[in-house]
Structures are given as structure tokens and as C-alpha cells.
Image (cartoon, rainbow, N blue to C red; front, side, top):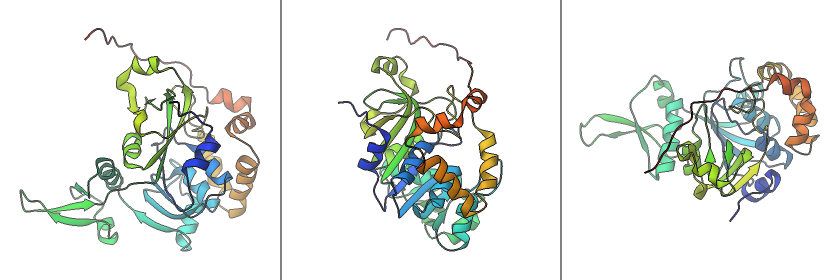
Length: 300
């Protein structure tokens, strides 16, 4: 049965006040359109989990969506601080848990595997382990040495952007891979946004590229340009100018609110957002063409 629905309807059906939300993607395929729709629908009291929160969570915090942040590294990539998150943390308005990148991914691995914890070798993040009570130690039954462990992360909802999927939610991703697969299997519900919805024969023709199986997906949403200002390999480039602009406009609550009013609350959907960006930006972000070598799967 087809799982295709609109993004507004998917958010209404699958994201609830108080949820633990995981928006996936590591610099690449960040589902900004879904974050904007959550803001537009006025969802509050969310726990936002993510490795590298990026601008998407800075905007959601600025909009008052978040109660708590679970993260590894906070920053505007290549630019500096995420000003609205930093202000909320320093003022005590936002609860938080911090992990190393490996700690965060290990939590997702435990959640995806149905395990009570995930062991880790000690790392350079010893100060985090000392200050975060979620880091614990157990004794290795084989060597007797102490092993650091972290608890599973099991989000209520994961939002994942991919290049393409079929109507059942079998999704293919290429380029930089993040934690998309782990987030999907660790979460109770999954919303998938895609640049293209294609026939299942296209998915079946290249099975190794299928990162997310449809069996874990609840909704498939056709949302071209969903990831802007991040990028989608083969579709559009990263908008570095926007990351620099956000650093300046988000330094004050007023600046962030003016952006939200103009680019989120003032627009009905992602198509209107992309149109408002204008043809000059569209040309600047064109991906061009650079094809990989075809693979012959042959007979078996």
C-alpha cells in the first residue's frame, strides 16, 4: 500500500507535542522543510536529538519548539556558534545532554539493535563521561577491564531526507552517509522526505543503494529542495552564503524571528520557499552532472 502523503499531513499524523524528534543527515540531506513544517504547525515541548544540531535546530529553538536538546557538537558548520541555541542553554531555558559523536552514534546503534546499552572504548571525551551521568561503566566479562557504555536512543519520530524512494518507502541515498539507517531503525515512527518518488523497478535495479527499507517507514513525502540550505548530492549544492547570513541575522531574537516570519510562517510550503529564493540562487546551487561508473549486476 502506498505511503505517499503530503509533508503537512505527515507532520500532523506522526509528530506530537512532547515527542523526542531525530532529524537526520550529516551536513548532507538535512530535512529543513520538515523542521519548518513543525514550526509552522506550532509543536512545542519537543526533545530534539541530533549529531551536530546545525541550523535546523537553531531555527526550531528560536521558534520555541524545544524543551531539551540531545546532541554531539553544536555549531554553524564552518562559521561559528548557533546563537539561539547557545542563548537558550546559557539562560537555562533549554535542558541538554551532550555526547561525543561516537557516543551519540553508539546510542543510536543500541536503539536500532534493541540493546540495553552499547559499549565504547574510552575516548578523548573523558570530560563528558565525568559530567554526563548517562555514561556508565561495566566490567568486560572476558578481560575484566572497565568498559564505557551509553544507553539506547529510541526517538519517537525520525525524519530522514533521501534522494529518491518508491511509494512504499524503500529509499536510496548516495554521497555522504550519516546516521540515517540507524535513526530509522531506532525510532518508533519514520517520516521520509525525498527529492523524487520513483517506480519500485528503479529501486530494485540498484538494491545496494537502498539504505532505508520501506518496512520501517510510516510516511513518504515528495519534497524537492527539502534540504536547503544543506545539500542533496546530485540535486543541488550547499548554500554557504546562507550559513554565513544566518550567523549574522540570528545573533538577536528579533533577527531570528524576522527570518521565521518571512521564510516559515509567511510561506505555505517548500515550493513557495524555493520560488522565493529566486532564480539567481537556483543557478548558483545547480549540482551539474558527474556520473559514477555503471555497475553490472548481471545474472545470479
